[in-house]
Image (tube, rainbow, N blue to C red):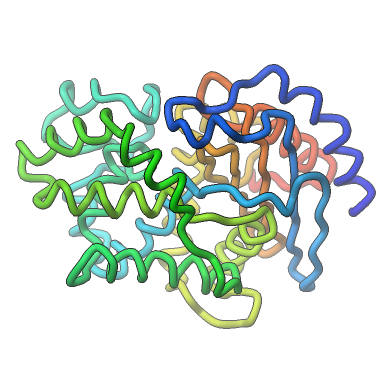
Length: 303
């Protein structure tokens, strides 16, 4: 397995040149576009890593899985899905047009930016700091890494340039879907800036693969919610490339525009990938292709 991962990184690293690092968040533009790393955490407790797997990078949209879990624990599925839908979208993850076209005025799913803003607004706590601590605690519990925190440079960069997310949040406030816009945005920008490595992501994916039980054997997510969020990862987790990813790779996964991908193979393994050069849909160009090879070689598809 170790030798195969090293071979895959060597094979796919040159493909990073076909992608482009996200530059609309200035701090992300500083990433090395040629970086590629992967970690796998298996059901027998072994970790295999290759490439740039020790690099720290921000969760970005991968955090949407975490906040969805917490909102569901706070409110239950019925209340959450009164405010956000359960349908995939063919539009980009940061599109505003869906909000204008559909009635009632609620986002199509929790994995696009507008839906994630609604979900973040539902996380309970007396302050933004308390709510963020709950998000961090779940990330730490899933990964087994108590040192995970927020990358302040990424947070400030995202906060200073998040004009489209601000527009979405205020649009949703008009229809009563979000109440405290500024607190919601503050939490959202901070959750996206939580910093991890491929090893952290592989253990988080493993936790979901074990129905919410982390590597230490602790049930940190209710089994029913682990199943629910993995379904969203399959249908919506790779933005508007989710259908193609389901066909070509066939495992629950969630990507972020920092180049991270968290993948979960039920009862078998968690996989963390880092490749900051993105394709036109916002997914890691080389990372997706590496996962295609892993799925084919190891017969990982759930279908």
